[in-house]
Amino acid sequence: YYTLRSVDTAGNESKSTKPIKINAGQTTKPPIPTGLSVGKSSTAVKNLQKTLISSGLLASDFKLSNLFDEQTNVALQSFQERHGLPMTGKVDKKTAILLNRLFLLNKTL
Image (cartoon, rainbow, N blue to C red; front, side, top):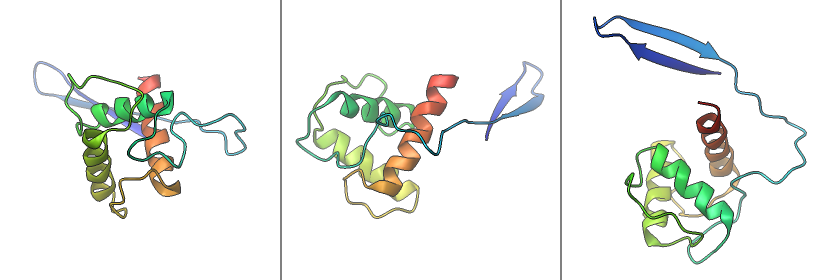
């Protein structure tokens, strides 16, 4: 589930909770697979970069590319630190789960 919070012009806050559907038995390749690290090049890297931008860890004017560069590496390590994961700079299983949830959440908003 995710919670959307909004504030109107009078400063009143409202919340709306909605489910995030992710198939446990999903057989299609996830948008951000495990194994991504510096030097890798694929469209999945671009998905990773989009997610890091939406998380505020890459600048909104960051030039998206298919290349996992040093800026992406630093942002990924910050993401891992923020979520209490080992700061490896590689997309491992736990990192991939969180990143894919965020990626899918951003696509539904």
